[in-house]
Image (cartoon, rainbow, N blue to C red; front, side, top):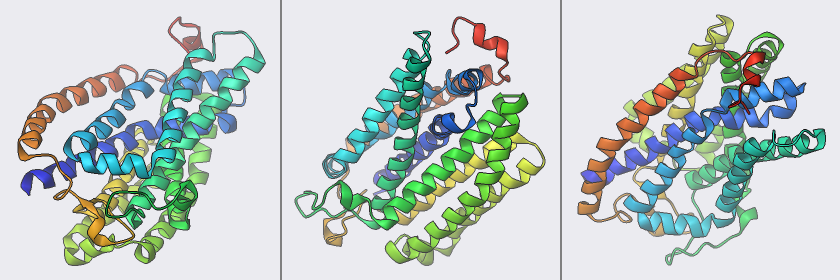
Length: 342
């Protein structure tokens, strides 16, 4: 049971890191039509995430790989139950990656506008749908004892699922604004900061609604009531959320971004801790739910995987920290003339 619990924690951690890293470029891509007032603004926004977005998505592959290897039954049931939603996310991510590379290949306003729309869709759709998916996981998925999903895509678009999508979208929009505040200067910087200040109370409102709805639609609070010390996660999440506003007022944008990152990570762990030991609960019958204990791989597999993770995840983290440090300078208009610029 110890190995299963460790892998449950690692499963949640990898998803949290993915949302923290890729969240800001989902936010920037979604804001492209809003903050991109000129061609230069749009290119600056794209280049603000350009050297990092594909590295960020390594964590999505890692989280998916861990689900497959550590909890294969969960992987199989999840991808059959949420197949349409997950395929939409996959196609959106592919579309966004292609758009980054193709956008500047032809000197045509119509060409660029088409790929700008693809960047928007490829950023907005995953931001919303990941939240919808996790919101539905938190409240339970209607699948039977054979792992067969008893619903369709519209079943997932229920009030709590949509609220989860809006929460993720709000988190990522603020996260993206703060990254632009760090990476840009001048008018674009000022508009990003102004929009972050406007979006923050919206995020707070959505977060409050989500916490209230969680008590109504899900059993997530059961673990917290059984172990009140776990409420420190929620307290820390609220503190990080208000830290965003505090550091915005201080014009400490890097600290505000870290507060936003902490908000996303702790928000993810709020749900993960509430789920434990379930990874994929059934809303039809609790006995059908897939947990860390009834859906895991063999102990030998989990031990081998743990050794691999202990060796390679720190290497990936060191590389990613190095990459972020390498590109930590503010973008200037002359940087757009470089050959490697988007």
